[in-house]
Length: 279
Picture 1 (cartoon, rainbow, N blue to C red):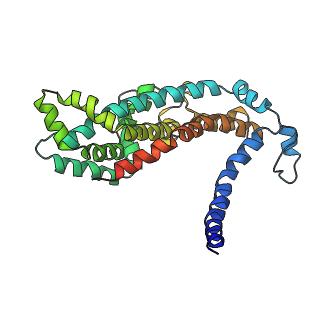
Picture 2 (picture 1 turned 90 degrees about the vertical axis):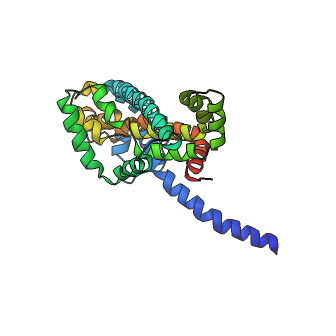
Picture 3 (picture 1 turned 180 degrees about the vertical axis):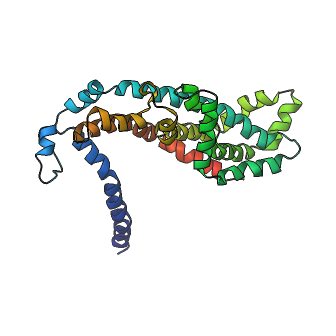
């Protein structure tokens, strides 16, 4: 009887989760399925088919030959790596200052810093656009990168993580003559590695999916990212009718992020939970 109850409980738990997982994964399946259908085969379907017996990879070849998708990918990699590296540098130093250093007005300054999260992002975009334009940095990688190197949320997350490290470690290091920067890189960063990995991956995903700012600050196709490039592909490349080729481009753009998340998903969860629990 107890075994039957356990089976029923597990069924009641996992059946809705399975159905929900299938519902969430179906768009990805449909995207991949459409990308391997021929243009003629796709247009000849009066009723969409859930599988194909004659898959083709010609669409993937077409998206690299019809439009400069490779350049868009390279631009996105440069933008993502540059932004993430600078963001980590700024975030680590700011989080260390707020969590460990003592200076007058620190709590008030940090409160005001957190209040910046209440400002609508649209207002920040306008300010950044005016600043970058006046500096004549439109259609440049510095113009793309600089407005994204600081993040209040990531500084707060890392600051809370740093605050969990016992003060005794810091005082002992200072007694031994260790500088603040050496203590940061030799003690704090290794201890907080899961959170650093989480922040890095989340920033990479954010940069890869960035759309509004790159589209606003660049009108030269040489600096288009994949987010803006996919719109360019749709309007001036493959056209609005070649849906299979468009889906092939979306698959190429999505695969790196999906692979990154699947590889580091446990570290992301561990870093978020560690940063959100104090004590």
